[in-house]
Image 1 (cartoon, one colour):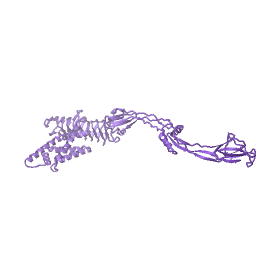
Image 2 (cartoon, helix red, strand yellow):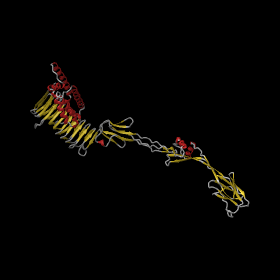
Image 3 (cartoon, helix red, strand yellow):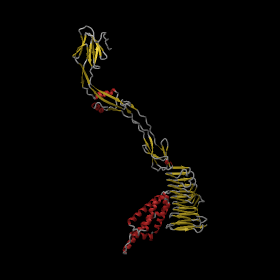
Image 4 (tube, helix red, strand yellow):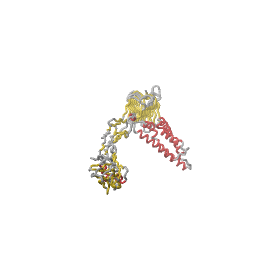
Length: 583
């Protein structure tokens, strides 16, 4: 309770019997010459506390009656250090600013007695108290900052006062990661193109659990739970022991479903190949339930089966080909590049040995000439030997070049190499062919022979029903299931046979290195039909028409009249034996 004395009834300037003075810092109430009355006391605001009759006086003035109990106490401000803590709204950071505050000591100046005393206060600065890390830490705790506190930052704030320092940081939560399946191939795009065995298809990225965070008040910041995913291998796919990588184990079309099941379907099934589908190239097998229409190309790394017809189209496979319908004006290659190898194998495989023999003979030729006092260059001796004893090598090389160019652009590079070999051997004297250049030529031809040998050791069969005005090549056996082959060119490394007893070959040519067994060869109308047999081939036909020609390694036979029960084979020396009866 505060006390404010009631104003005197007499005017303020009336003489008073009460006076006030200050001695040794104490305000005293003195009785004046007149009894009664009051004295006026005033003081600087906020400098002193005044109590009258034990009660605090508000304001900065009061009247003091005679005999009053008056106490005046100068105010004192103690020195301190202030610790200002600020916590971010998200409670992930707290700052501290230390501000040392000086104190103030006040004393009353002595004053003579008067009935209207105005107090005068003397002030003295008190030096601030040095801040401490312990007090700063206590301030943080009062602000509930208890986690992520940096003691070094606190020490810096205590030393470098007046500047805001970040003294606590929360830990941001690390969100987890759900497990995912990373597609390493374009499944949609490769659905009709396929992948090769050994192709990585899908990588599993395992889930990763999140790490909870914590704010500076110590409250945990939770993270969402995560889900893992499984990699499920299906047909044609293997997965490593850690279940992280799915790899194709066969050639074919890759598939994946929403549950992570991965498979490779070796066979691509199509209703037809036409202008809607466009050309088809597939790493695997292809089955076509309908037709292959004009202008279309179908290429498979493995086999091809066509239930319908093939018209003015191109079929090429690394494996077998079956066409159940008719084939018109088309090209078929069973065995892909191996089919090309089969067409040139009988000539290419002989070249390394023949050229080695020619090189030996050329060496002997030079030695004889040297003993006779003449000198022949390496190039001249090679050319003379080629022209006199091995002209067949040049003929074979020329035909190989032609066959490779006809096989398409993919073989033009090899054709160019063979053409260069032919030029070098034909003009060895003019170009001064050196032993080193001849050695390089032998290496190149030997490599081609190796490639061809490897190709023909993996035969691919061809099955046709009816073929007209077409070309067909197979490294395996060509089998006729229908009426036969008409006016077409056929290369059958493994031979040609028919499951239909009425099947015929009329017009065109057949090149085979295995047995050819057919009901009829040639045409009653005299269309030229040529059967070219390798050294291991033979021909068995119920009838060969006049005009039909059989060619072997050592000669040829032309039927000038229709013959029946025809059999053609070769003896150990490669001589052709022809047996037949009059038709």
